[in-house]
Length: 562
Image (spheres, rainbow, N blue to C red):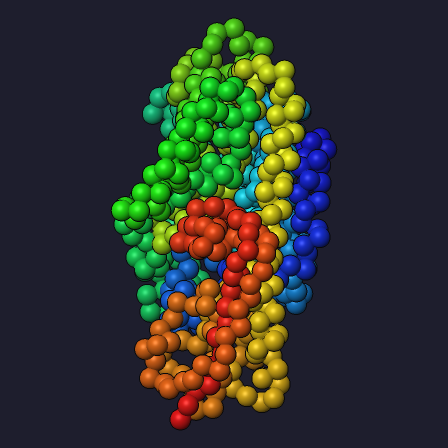
């Protein structure tokens, strides 16, 4: 039954992802795949290998891995089979299918009927962030598969109090956190769903969460390796700062407005007045960005305006959900008694589990979904904010839309859902195309500038990261770091400008620039400062993608002098 309900969602996602099975590796794909390869030779320390990344320092992965090592083991089959692009992406599609199956099952356990659960699956599968991350090999989709499986088992435990379901939910939620720390708020959501009416029953109701916390605490620092400062605390101190919070908060809300379905849904369902408010706020943001005297306004006015639009849309949707009597035959009625059953006697525990208690009116009834929607806020202190951190909240957005549609009868609701799916799918396709363009440019630069020189017996050093460095090292180049070993006289250095953050100008070597190859083209961009595209990092911009003409990347070729 669940497979049948999830089949349309899996089909919609596969329609986009299958043509991109041979898409080059991108961004952090090489890190996790190399960890998987290392797990095959050193199973106890999959992150204990040296990798030049980030600012160009020569470090062990365990020293800047802000999470657990579980993805290395999950991706180990891909590494064992050769680690080809199509293998990794096909494996990711299988993980996505598990994520969608679990999401539909969760929707059913929360009281959705078959059509509503089907809609939840379609909204998740067509979400731009879901599609974009499913086209990579990073562990975000993996984490959400574990997270939604954990929520499904948690709701089964809530219904029937099976100890096996409770244990499975705790371990699966822990696995999600060990894959991506941004899924940690799911544990808080689970606590809200299991919260008993009295603290006397807390141990009986909440012990699966204790299992999750203990499992995360026990395994998050396990198998990281013996390198100095190879701890989660060390990585957290290196990569996070409270100074990042304001900038990342603006980016989070802006990405929610542009990639999440809630704002578009509100525009389609709440009428022209709300659309007018959104237009006025965006116009105000554009006007503010034109004030040349304030750098902050130029940078943040439009993203902040879009973020406010998202907040207004969320408040409006939740406000409609919370109000109104006579909702007895809607999904709210079918989702009744969830919280109240926390204190129900054992004879009532066999009833259908649901999300909203009939005695809970107002904002509190939607509070678990709001917390769930904001899961990505856990990444606010991180060095950057990327749209990928919105993925844990995507199921909550889909559930809010379905719940709101059941509360506010809309004759055009099927058309609204169709538009949301179509717009999300098209946006996801554009992001995948833009990401493929970037990754292909870096792989082509290696084939053009590095591989031929390696074949001629020259020593080549690659400055950069992401796909460029991974393919360069596979071709035989050495990673250019800020510390020895360094290039010697006669060696060649190739620098990928977009992703090189090292200190080449400070290195004690003399060099001459032979030439620069610039990859300019027209199309879709996901990382371009001039166009404001920053899907993977708000350091580049606040748009998930941009269409125009510009520089994909530039590659500098140097020769080291005596």
